[in-house]
Image 1: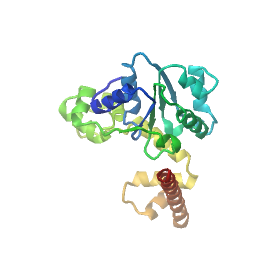
Image 2: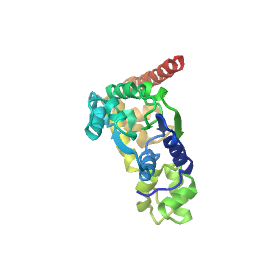
Image 3: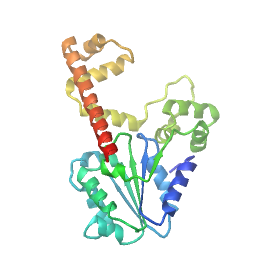
Image 4: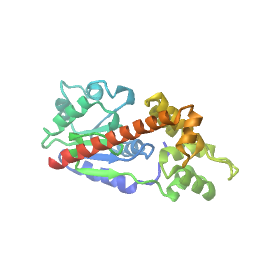
Length: 271
């Protein structure tokens, strides 16, 4: 996979691996920021340690012990603790925002009982994910910034003009950069397409919304930012009263998620 930049982040992982005792590194960044690519590049150079990779999955978020089943299937052992104690290990939990709560709890239980075992756990997640106890075990936090314009040129081999255009369009997110680089139009006036991963993410979000909320969101997207609610409602085939309700439902859900995040942070601060 193409790769560019991330020198400081690779060095942080090297430093964590060099510790002769259990360590937990949390890599936090939005979708398409290159968390998986960073870890993949780094583990390719790891020697003298077993590497175990497991991941969360949106469709398995409610499957109890789904991630732990992956881990035990790859490592063996009767429990997570036995598996991690068996030999020097790098454990990578990717897409932790989609890991089932039971697996998070089981992993926290095991990690809290490691004392001197050379186990490095790398957790890749999105900002605001409810990692609870796992988040509190973090020894090192790595936050991935966007790629620079020079990094985008190195990643794509594009000339300066198209590389700058791609960098601006993707906000420097490497997943989007790599996906769109082959389809940069020759005409600088031709609009760039939306990244496929972003389209899929928006589609999943809309699919989880009540139908009227989804219709209102789609209408607003067609009309563009700053459109009036009345205009979006008309395009969506909703009365203004129904549009008000749909808008309120969306705001209430957003506030509930924000409250949950604030409560989790407060619990963590209280220890």
